[in-house]
Image (cartoon, rainbow, N blue to C red; front, side, top):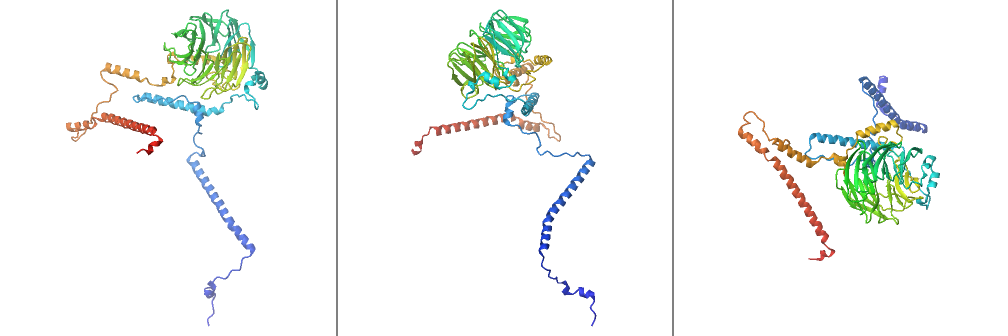
Length: 589
């Protein structure tokens, strides 16, 4: 028998069969489970390492190629602006270009609209950076704010704010009229018996003081605090801040009230003889003299939005005037008795009036309609609106301040009240300050009214802290940007519109002068073609195809308009039929 070799032993079928493995012990099971749990975590770490290696390689390649490495912004683009914030800085409606306008006009209007939209967005974005907030007066539980006295307010606020409440006892030459400068820094007072003084009311520095030895009807600052106008008994006088007389304008006689238009450099005066006159302060000439034919003019106000003058008359009407017309732009019957006082808000939307019928009425000037009215037992002799919409009304020796007057809500109880010693003759809010100036028979009173002034000012327009050099530069710039008096009207947006009537008239004159219409379309001239396609017959065929295209477009438009009108008429007739039917009509046969 042959010997068995080791190769044969390895190749036997018995060795190929797997041996049964012994059962696993408890420690072996735990190790295996730990390894199985660890494997996916290790795989994730390895994949992340591989990704990091790949990104490092990509960056190195980009650096070699000269490409920049920039991180992607998770919030691309500009931050969205709230709609209410945009509405706050809206500059009126967009300009509509007429259909027949030239290409140049369309480009200019488009660029101006884009610039105004950009300015609106920028102003809305930077509104968050404004440092100051408006003030507010709040009482304790079951306490009305109109019972809080000025002494209590002055004691509760800081020293600088408390110093804004003061009294000037000037009983000898009263009653007094007053005016604040546009920056809100300087105060001008004028007594009925000739006393005139101007001062920096915050530092209490007296600039000038004099007695003109004549009756003073009104005082008004001009474009800067360096000049002011005084309406004396006979003529109109202009003085500088040191009290030196600069001009005596004898054309303006018996002046009772004055208003200064800062962007037009116009001083508007209303006289006892019924004349409304305009004086250009920059040139020193009379722009217009209008006879209103309504008698004595002792009630006057201006609309800051469009520079239109509002005059109140003894027959209860209020007329709106512009220097361009000899007739009023509009007339409103506001009261059953004579108009005693009126004021217009800074947006030019609302007008508040008071009359001898002892009513205070709020009007929407855009629609010339009354919104609401309230009855006062003694009536209001003086009215004034603040920059934030607070209304102050003077009745006798009491001043009442009302909140949330502008709008559809009726006038409720007063926000604040203050009693004075003498009869009130003048009211004016200080710009950019929570201060109400009151001129009365015993002198002048500065009253603290929280929430009255605009907290943030535009330093390019009216800067209370400007230096002498800044004031000079601002004056030069304002003179260069002066608005002409011909542009004063009810709608200031007319400047950006095209006068279609005058355009058509010019077009007709141009056609008559030239003998042909330069804006008309040229007749169709077919292009010359080769290979016999430009024969006389082919040219005529091509002309016939284009002959009536203009007529076809007009016919299509007229057909569309006709169909739309028919649809509207059918809808209206259906609505009438449905509206006339009653509930018992369904039982009829």
